[in-house]
Length: 162
Image (cartoon, rainbow, N blue to C red; front, top):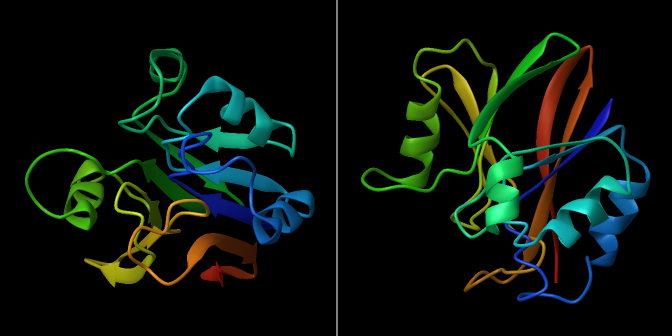
């Protein structure tokens, strides 16, 4: 199973369209996971046009999206438990807030966003993954999204592009 992992699209403010590498992956995936900060319902619906979408609200999402999407959720895909949260808030690092959101939960992977910084690391036995941003790289030299592949196990990897 191929899952596209994306966050922090911030559209239309940070881009007029999704980048080609992301669109190519969206066209061939089985599921899309978005870690929040679409910005508008139109962008949320644009992602839905590619297939099944699981998402949470981010801190800059419109009121409509804030009322439509949860702040945090857990899904299970082929036996892999995935926690999803945007990661914004006060205190701690973005990674620390994401991990803390699932302190009492049994998850294999936590997907988060907010920082726009690609992140991929085990912490306290849980794999933390931030796909970065496909439209707002900030001071990084590249844009990015992620691919979570679940077959006889699972793996997360980043896709980088300019």
